[in-house]
Amino acid sequence: MADYLDRIGAGKILIDKDPFSFDWTPPEIVGRDNELNEMATIFHGIDGLNRSCKSVIIGPVGSGKTVLANTFSTKLREKLEGIRDIALAHINCRNYSSTMQVLQRIATTLDPRHPERGFSSGEIIQTIRRNLITHGKHLLLILDEIDVLVRNESAELIYRLLRIDEGREEKGTISLIMVSQEENLMSRFESAIISRLGLSNVLKLEPYNEEQLVNIARQRAELACRKGSISEEVLAKVGRYSAAIGDARLSIELLEAAIRRAEVDGRDEVLTEDIEPSEFRVTSIEPSQVDILSKHQRLVLLGICRRLKKKDLVSSGDAKKLYILVCEEYGVKAKGHTTFWKHLKTLEIEGLIDTKTANSVNGRGRTQHITITNASPGELENRIEKALLRE
Image 1 (cartoon, one colour):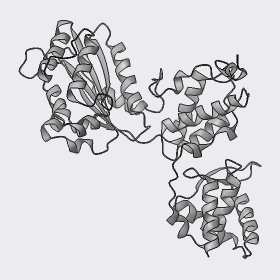
Image 2 (cartoon, rainbow, N blue to C red):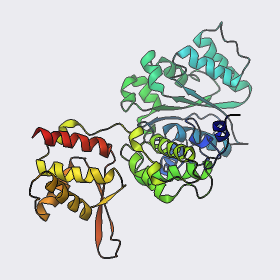
Image 3 (cartoon, one colour):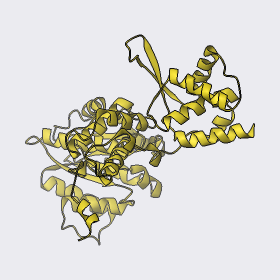
């Protein structure tokens, strides 16, 4: 057998690939404790047999919307065991993008024998309701990427689901969690739907911060990799680069790619240089941002870019030394200390660099560390050099 096939299942670092899967739900959600508490408040009273609850989760890509919805619903079902029988249905409206497809999916989740054809939408809704009442179940329905369904058709299905018990003796058939990355989702709904959903039941997620992204990467590493194969330095770099957009998926992809790179090299440990964010990151620095800089601001940035091609961070002291060297290269006199600091601050304000203050290595005072998280330093270096040639 070919030697290259020996790599399959070798797992020098990775022992379980599932935690890196797109649709994997972790045993515990990281960085969303406050949001879980808010969901619990929204679903207060769900233990009552005639109660239904509604929630809308809105947030950007990679903010943990789906994980939050799945984790909460699973924990809720466990909590209510013996009190209320909860049936869970998670439907991604990108995969089931019409009213009939969604209803058919709900019906077959509750009863795999449900016929695929021959019923109207109204008949399927009543079949779903009858099934739940007959078996004494309450349906907790998650409609993920609900904006796709609304754009393709309308919000009519939502309205009908919200009114499923209207005029009936039995109440509390269905609770609903809708998930969307569309910030203005609620504006797509008529007032009758907004009134039934309740604006206070809308939960908006912010992008993850750096600390949360490091913790997410750490959780995946601990569950998926051999102990000791992923260092804190690697996790810190993953968090730093993915924090530029606050996307947990980017954090996970960066770590997975680094693991793959290390294993291809035959190593049993991931190194910081295995993290190559430019593979996944879309450059968010516009050419005009470089064009409007003064010559010396470009020279300061050029020195920083050259160092960051090889290192994760550059200290402000080293940045000044690099600036002086670049000035010599281009035959110009370097500006003084005060002007250099003003240029550094301008670059930070313009979003071209990120800075962090930390205790000095020698224990005296504090020093500033510089990094670039929203562009490839090498690509930015080329852009600056071209701009300097045009002068």
